[in-house]
Length: 148
Image 1 (tube, rainbow, N blue to C red):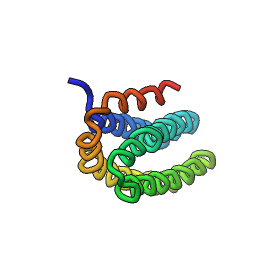
Image 2 (image 1 turned 90 degrees about the vertical axis):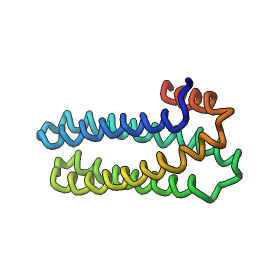
Image 3 (image 1 turned 30 degrees about the vertical axis):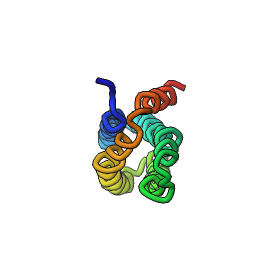
Image 4 (image 1 turned 120 degrees about the vertical axis):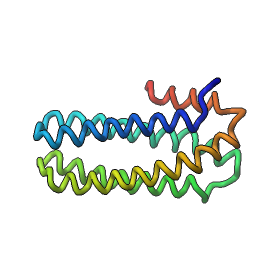
């Protein structure tokens, strides 16, 4: 059986969560070089996830359903909110401020968990239902983005 949009993007959430944990562990260890490296990897993976959704899956979903102001708009706003926290975290990595960093990372973790739950329980299931005929093509487009 081929991947579903839900299984593909849910696995990508788990991969981002793993990078998030690696980043937090590096900051906790006080190894700021490793912290910057793992932070950069996490941010790249997170941004790629947002791009796969915003450049491929969301437009396909919106075109198919005609829903442009609904769940995808909310998810885009939450992506922007998470990016704002990540920008502040980058400043803490540069200034080696672990206490402020961990306050922000706790906020980001809560945002990500709530966001992922909405996507995994609602939006991805809706996408699979509406896009089932095109799901293999959409997943391939998302995978192609990752290779660029």
